Image (tube, rainbow, N blue to C red; front, side, top):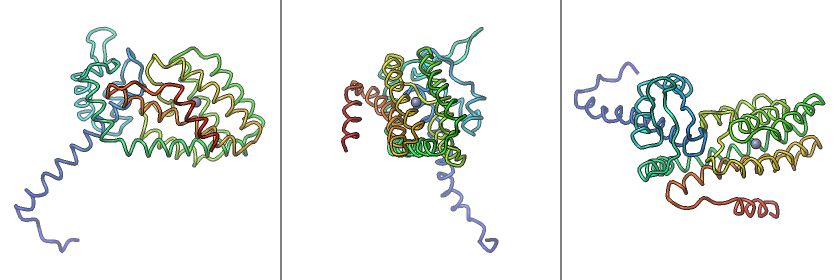
Length: 275
Ligand SMILES: [Zn+2]
């Protein structure tokens, strides 16, 4: 209110560190998002990282903040910059202890929030699949089958990842509940720089991820087309857990532990089916 007295010089000094901390928090947040994106495979090793301008627009922050974060990632060996023609910033698989330490630190700091976001993402995918099972039209059914076929025939890596994104957008469209889709998309934009395309893990795990996703997609589309709301919800929710596993594996790798294999994923899945 206007009746508030003007701050004394001592008060200004007292509030200055708070302002400093707010800037620091934003820088840390941008740094954590870029590190997480590299660690969980939103960008493949060797792939060009988005420009400062693109990242500033996507994250809604200033280019200075983005530049500082990129410089840190280059310095710690998660990105490498290349000058000249065809130059830019490229993704490196985080293997050096220096790079792994940075990943571990960033994931540990954000861990509770990341887990909570991933859990919410799973439930929203379940809800959208359930809505699609109940509300899809004949035209949606045809389009869903086409998108499933496009995923089945896509080449490994970036094409499969794009086809996966397109399939999930088709499921969201078939749910005919725009608000639900918007909530999921806005959550995914907070989690993944490349949303609505999902992270794809480390290149050594692509084949396994792709065949497991194909099985999930086949069962998911079958349940939706059969208008089996309960089954579609369960498969949709469980399929989205792959993102959480990528996150957990990124943390294990950063700590020098071996990632949980498909066998463990299957055990988890069968336990969920039994319960
Ligand atoms: Zn998928």
